[in-house]
Image 1 (cartoon, rainbow, N blue to C red):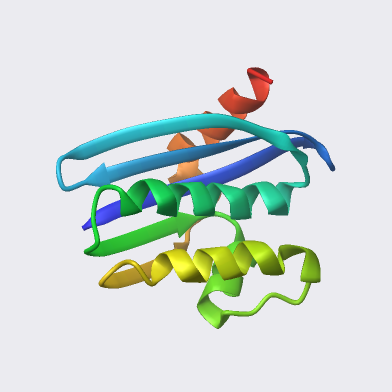
Image 2: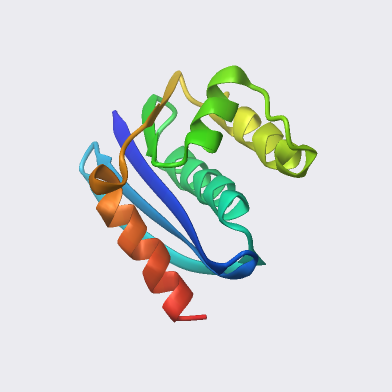
Length: 128
């Protein structure tokens, strides 16, 4: 099983943005910190999950357990619905990506349990 921790961050709304991804399990220990186009925080969170799922798909088709401190992202994926049309394309892409795994779970976690991904996202902003 892969554990996928994701976080998106924006310095401003919108502003400089970055994503952080931490993948562990099945012998992997991967950290990704990537600047993205300036955007709002929620969009950055969705983009972080998309990038994380793409990375996980290169490693396994088995079980992926994603963790995010973004309630909007976790609820959208769990319900397969997002009210704000702006986030609909992100959700559709996420749902397509999750179909590539035998089992996919997503769980909301508090900020303090997502420090690795958060640090990577903030590092990405500083590199903008």
